[in-house]
Image (cartoon, rainbow over all chains, first blue to last red; front, side, top):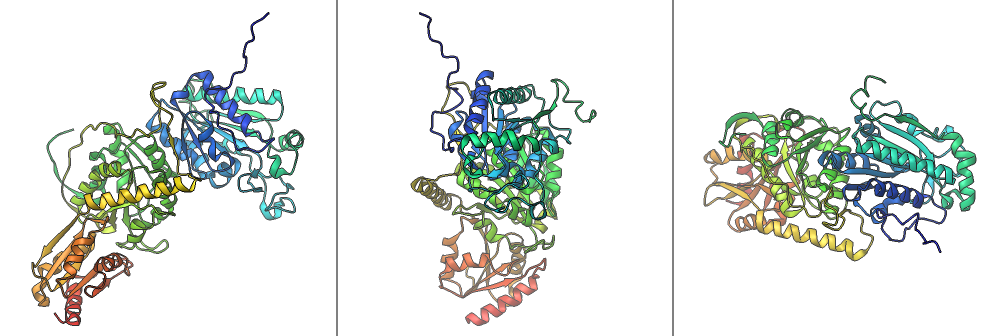
Length: 259
Length: 359
């Protein structure tokens, strides 16, 4: 009889604390992908996670690494300093769309512009989750939230922000990609992007960000499967999936000149 | 890096910056604001000489959060700003007090409220001693009154910040920042990294449990325990580092209370006390949190009245009144907006206060 082999072990870089995320939420998937990458690079003891404010505020309980909990939107400033103090640390922020694209827009743009050598995992579910379903800067036009009860109207609230495209105007970033956590293929692709982002950080290439289109069945008012379909049928159309920037190793110095 | 003490003629801003470097600061994050721009400029110029990091943040909000991150990562870290900038930093200060992280913050106070002006003021007394954002946390607050003290206090602040695992605020002002005086510099030395077993960063596998820096405590008792620990720190600081200076008559009829630049004016008043025909003594706090309650209370039982001189409409005076608890009259000479009382103004007010008190 063949010996059973565990081909997909629970990552060392995740604690066994029960997560507080809702059923059907893809935060758990995102955590797992990041943890797998940390394990694959064998850098758990030099990784510092920066948790921010939102549903993932407790990320420091889930990532089995040193962690710092940052105030709302300021993760990139906190990560900047940690990395400046410990250039040999592997530093990443884990931020939602409210944290990163609303209150923290200044910090993310400037960290990217400076080419700070850390990685950003950006969870875009187009809604404020923890505060119970308010409109986010990434909320789609027409999307109903508790603060856009008739659907987001451009007359009242303008248009959703495409963060990757915006950051892609800067010279600082080494890696910018948008992925979705909606199908097994896309999740594998997301893992590749996260891996590449960390790889470039380890090579000292500078700022990397992976946006992950994620579900929020609770505040979208959908069942988990419906939420997955919503990413596939609606979100991807507005937030195209692609690698916007992938600076090959060794090209950091020329980054400014080739823009 | 010479070991000998160099005597130089420099501005308060430069003395503060060099004090930071001498105190072991190797990470500086800041954002320009008048009247303290010479500090970040000095740091940008000189930090590389000691292998340190200078980084211009995109805002005061980012700067204080960089301070938070650097402190969490185990660095001696500092930022400097002026009143409106410190207002912006308040959330970050509160997070640091909640996470029990040390750092040194310098406020070269300018006129307010609002955008105010860039002239001298002492109207951030509450902001420093009470207003470090939301919650119960407080900043240890040092009040230098000369270029030399800006230098010395800033250098010493790093040791105090680590000793109490708390923010130390240096409360300067626009005049102290800009004026030039002779100053004996503390030599720069290589210091071992601060002892912060709680700091995050790379470590040998299995050498310790993972470290978490956090100020989110949903459990009531855990949250209360943070506050109790902070209160214990403040009590310890009150017993160990409360500092003040006194100058003048040993048998005063009126006690002057002033800190910082106001104390400089009051020194002049004490020297010319004869003009007022009143025996005067100056009590000058060098720390206002912890506050020198005991000596002020003692004098309040021996003098006819206390006159507080400050460049605000009356903030510091409240702490004096809390110390005095009604034992003697406490009067205020307060100016604002960049205006200052002259020595003659102080003496005129002293005569008034003395007459009212019947001394």
